[in-house]
Length: 189
Image (cartoon, rainbow, N blue to C red):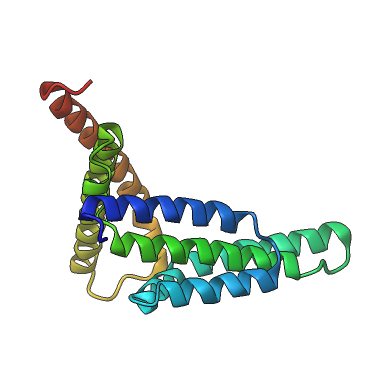
């Protein structure tokens, strides 16, 4: 029997939560390899798109932090530590990110969270903030490009990031206040 869409999404979110909790307890590299293979086979539709997101977001940060931690331990112990725990950390983090991206591509969050109004409101507020900050970021990048006769250098971007960060905080605060007032006017407390 096929679930109606909200129930299907709720079931997928519940399965994702259980899977992420289970994966977070695994620290054996071969076991993580098996879980990776099973996840890609189970979520094969859209796996390439989810893997690309992992490669762009989770992998660079996790790799950097893992290498920095490995180097720090090497400096403290004055000998190279075993690399397997750090590789397992990288594999586990990227697997959790893959599962999250793959499930989010399949789930309709607002209908799935409809039985829980507080979670639905929190999701709506978060999405509104993300949209506003994404617009600010893209408009600021375009403004910086239009003011310069050449492509902005990393130094120029970093020099302008302070003002952008201040604007982002200001807009976030304003948006949060406006959303809160709008929700209060509609009877939400």
